[in-house]
Amino acid sequence: MPNVSHLECSVCGAHLEAGKIHNLCSCGSVLLVRYHLDAVRRTWQRESVGAAVPTLWRYAPVLPVRDPAAIISLGEGMTPLIQTKRLAAKIGAKNLWVKDEGLNPTGSFKARGMTCAVSMAVELGIKKIALPSAGNAASAAAAYAAAAGIEAHLFMPADVPQANYIESKALGAHVTLVDGLISDCGRIVAERKDREGWFDMSTLKEPYRVEGKKTMGYEVAEQFGWELPDAIFYPTGGGVGLIGMWKAFDELEQLGWIGSKRPKMIAVQAAGCQPVVRAFERGEARAEFWENASTVAAGLRVPKPLGDALVLDAVRASHGTAVAVDDAEILEAGLELASLEGIFAAPEGAVCVAALRKLLANGFLSPEDRIVLYNTGSGLKYLESYAAKIPTRTV
Image 1 (cartoon, rainbow, N blue to C red):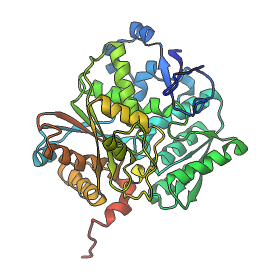
Image 2 (tube, one colour):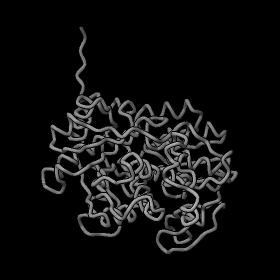
Image 3 (tube, helix red, strand yellow):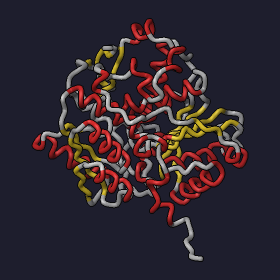
Image 4 (cartoon, rainbow, N blue to C red):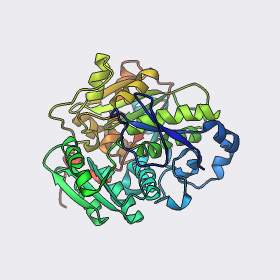
């Protein structure tokens, strides 16, 4: 290192200096990290990756941390890619895999973003972070902030899953429950951050969480022998994981590690909060705020994702689609996945199973396609949601 070239605005294309504290571009748009990929290509060979540390930091040459001593890691990444057999046979998909992100620290893929963002906070000298969260991002931020010895100020809807609240408090974070949605929590952070001296680590309002999450794309490529699947189903609340994977595939091609083939990127949302699906179906470039958002999948209750345009661009460029699933289907799919494959998925992951069934039924996907479903969290974080579907009895 350093392999970082600069930060680039995703809309106006402005270049900002790396190694400085940044949130959004001056035009209000998302910043993305760019690398000297030609130089990286000369010094980093994909054959060497297999011998690297078994965490997402095996991809350090394309991650933004310059000082290895700044890295705050809890062993995140390199989650299993599990081939399903019973579920595949039942729904008619012959080559079906689940990437189980529920085995990350704090039980969700949010650990990927936070290891990178908090490590950069350490490197840049940031002492206090703040963010709104539907639950799992708060847990991850609390854990990595604790490991780094910095303050975490977290704002979550009052009806957040209890596991996330208890976990965040146990990890020493300052937690405020808000009577409202994640958008209301975000408004509080924006109003108070300057007065309180907080760095705003909200989704896509800083450049580095997406860098950690893009490693899901590097991993799926590596785990499939550097050949991408035909379709990827991704639960889309903020959509950062999908944005990150799409970025990863572009970087991998520039490195010469994969070709130009891309999976169909399928954004999956809950019927009670589907701003991206609505925008996709209408042919719009941006999503509109979804009023009265409601779903058992807390991480999908994002009424207006900041990265909506980037998500829609990736879905359309990949010839993918966007699908919504209702809450009853989500919970039934979660129990089906658990009972058939032993994977107890968060509702956000279960939504992909229900969406796959729809796209096989309407012919959008073929039974022969190699398909990957991303389960973004552990079902153990959502016991209240599943409890309604599990009868209780005494003996």
